[in-house]
Length: 396
Image 1: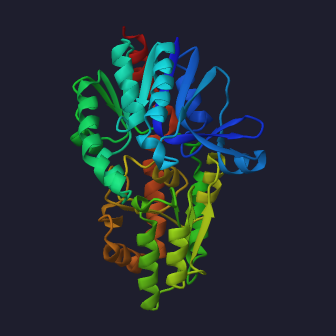
Image 2: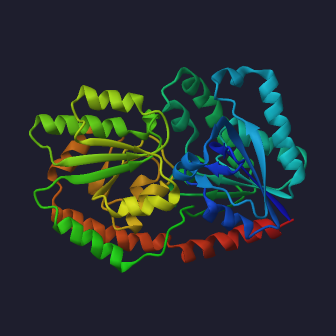
């Protein structure tokens, strides 16, 4: 059985030796999960034109194990942006997506609110190929939050198309327990289950975090965020501006580290504008294999997003006993203590949280979050997913 995976967010990257990589949270643990359900996994993603040297690619991205896999390279219609309105490039993208659909027996469509995934659904229906939709985020918020004219023009049409796609689907998997379900109703079979892939939860990691926090009395607390550093919808600018306002009040006990892909020029300009060079560090991208090591050594994980589904990075941070502070975007409030949730974009609420927080508070949150992370342990989620995906695979 050939299973197709289509997504429009992540991009395939290649190196000079023609090895394949992905960014973000797609990694071999995820691919192996899908490979368990099929004889061959067909992966259709948009592809970057840039070719990386091997060392840079290995250091920044997640390599793809091509065992039992086939890659379909879809042209990226957003880079350069002129391609989006090019009939030639759109036709080429459609042809590749349709061929991938023809080649598969069933399809998994992740985030049905962009050109690539909606096109895949159209061809699945045309060629009578069963499909399952993974609902991982909000269409309107994702487009509007980009802040571009294109994003704002696309937000409403794609929101309408996404809602229709979910209503028509026979199978939908939501990454939230209830947040996405409220807005994107599916009248077929549904499951609420995070797509996070955690390492083994170790009590030693909790104790390590508690010991580190004990040593932080009167020292700078290190906060961190994972996410693209070129997208304002990820909200890192709110944290930077909050730190500036705190510093003006004489509170200078925070360091902020940012991990993620993208051009950080906008954030660098903010850092220089506010004189926060000693407070904010832009680390850049890390392969997924190194994320847990970084999480182990920060004191607070903060997710200030304007748009989310259920943020995998937050759950990963919880599994490493990180205290978390989150915006109220998407499913974030399902994860955090209410007193550590602030309204997205509300810097003053964030400032008040940071001003009041104590080492004892952080230690209690470390214990609470580590305990809550057990709800997302791999063996539990695998069982829930397996029952649902096996039903989808076996249902004719």
